[in-house]
Image (cartoon, rainbow over all chains, first blue to last red; front, side, top):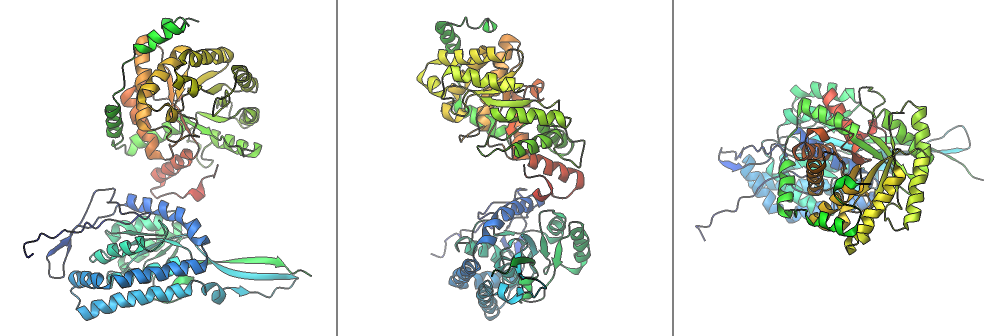
Length: 280
Length: 315
């Protein structure tokens, strides 16, 4: 059927496990690398961010108390779901960024592998970074890492899918919940990834994805009192200083990373130390 | 008692009075409430609305697990909702179970909250399933302990069976117990009344029987204070004012959890009953979680950044 009219996909936000439009009603145009019209994703407002923070905060209790084993399984499940849709993501990346098929495929498969890699970390991180401390007294003294709470992240512009996943996966592995602002120029694979998350047994609100302008949303993330930390890997250096100043006001931990590593997990954990008497 | 000259206390006159009521256009009420809910209130108007809403909150705790400590903490919060900002008004009242009335009154007086009234839920709240003798004692007990507002529940069973005169007489009896000492709020539990026509009928019945306030719900049944139900009740007090020149208050309770919901209620009041009702003497909001959201919105307006629940008290 050559005269078939395409059913265009409406790209919306991902907040609290559902796909709302922006509260502001705004959208912006995304074009292919060759300049042709591609889609009208939502231009998120600060109020969408506010809603997402409320969702992330209420999801934190359940997610952080889930067993590390369970969190790892869900991350693995996300990888499974993403892999099943590989071809769709390859196509989306190719058309948005103009990447070759080989390059796009490499990005998607690496994204799958990243998820599996962090899934494995979830039940190992506390034994590797926690400790049993010698103290001068009849006590056991343990230090264990715990999630910080709600983390806001800004995904890099490129690679849009891999960069997003490299940011999300380590944050949620330890039990944090996240609000992430996707690549502005190539947000489509991020929103398709939200569909993957929605079918992966991930509790609502653990991951919330916004699309829009970084210079508009990031300062509101930094000043928000109910966000505990930020991953600004995807932010241009122009804005970094402003974000760090705003974040200092509310003692926010602000980090930036170049590549996926286990440090991205520990960056968003806090150490809890417990004293326990030694019995007879 | 002359019941505003509307009824003479007999069943026949009550039926005649209530049969004259016009029916409620259900679709119309839903549409009107939905339309008013879309109004956007910003900047200085929003600031005014937040402070007005705070002054209208009946800060409520109605749990089996209520302790003296919790009620005292709530009283402290009622007088100074934000301890860091003295420009925040006190709330409209504290609403507790009968046995906590004395505790609340004493603590409020102690901390400079003489202006904050204590409301007691009585008459076998929340079900209302007790004999009239028990209900009278229940009410008297609350008033003796220092309650200046009584939130009574109607016998929904009797209302739905059509024994309207029994419901009427019960309100009249409790009204007499309250006398000059206490305001009477009559709770309908609109979630159990099924139709808007019933809500309108119950409103007129309670107002004629001597209610000072009509209140949507106990907070124990869902749905509670939905916008159309509040609209129907506000229309009832407006119409009643036209008939009698007496202004009856309205108190939605249950399900109003955030600032947006509260401001929607204020819009309903302004557009339905009128500006005369926009104060804590004639409009109250029964809530517990709402106050923290109002405070957080206020902090946001003052400081320009979003607040966190970590910085306002839990109860």
